Length: 343
Ligand SMILES: [Zn+2]
Ligand SMILES: [Zn+2]
View 1 (cartoon, rainbow, N blue to C red):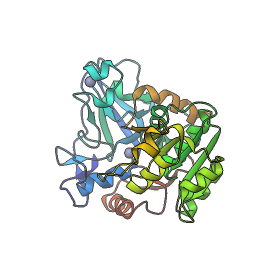
View 2: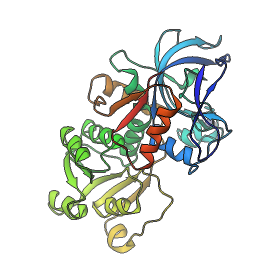
View 3: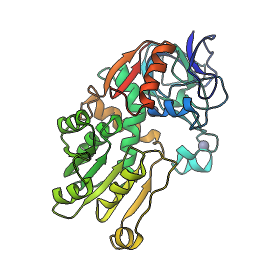
View 4: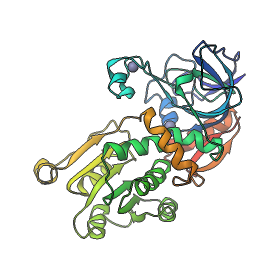
């Protein structure tokens, strides 16, 4: 089979011809129908985040069709449509037991520590599979397993309650999901902060009030739009100290900011004015939980979460095309919002 693999840090991915993997007793072989190209993959290729052992097939946003199952697998049959939970967990360490499985001691993310979906086939434990309803196209099924799942986890970590106000910093792929999921969770007011006109326009179409950070201080604009209060929840999806600072300073009394954007840099806070005085909370967001996926699939099936505008481009399973998408992501964002490989 064809697989697009990372061979060396900082180098373009390469097409390799590999044998089709054999599923073990508890595993399933999935024929890949769609694999999302994520901003994280650009970080991996550049060496900003560890990938091992090399060479390794990237791709952690995967949907397809069951092609073969191990003899101990029940609940999945050949031909069924599935999407894959990318975090492979043991299911019985102290973190898995507590429902904190992203921190599983033996946890392995596909496309980072195990071969991923930039390939014609992938083998995963059957417990990582979720049935993908017929109403959801494969491309959307792939993308929702990363960006939508992270957006939902961020809103859950921030304990968004019905009637509360939300500011989403970053109206790209994650942001478009966060806006819709905030509405689905009963948010009273959803604001979306970005600097790119097309992303602000998308946010508006999805029902958010756009806040153009290129036109002025977004914190002041958020305060103006909330009658001076600030927002109950801010979600930072960009990964810049500037936007983390803005998200934090836009909070209301007892507001919570959930940070899901990745950065190695630090940002400063004024503890008395902005943290203690408001009983504000800063919350880190790491991946998501398998238990959050059924809710996402239901919301997508009934188009409460509509990803049709998120997947804007598809490319074939070819190294040059995939490297070009990663190059575009490196220069921050690229043209489309999400590109999906359709082998
Ligand atoms: Zn991803
Ligand atoms: Zn575990």
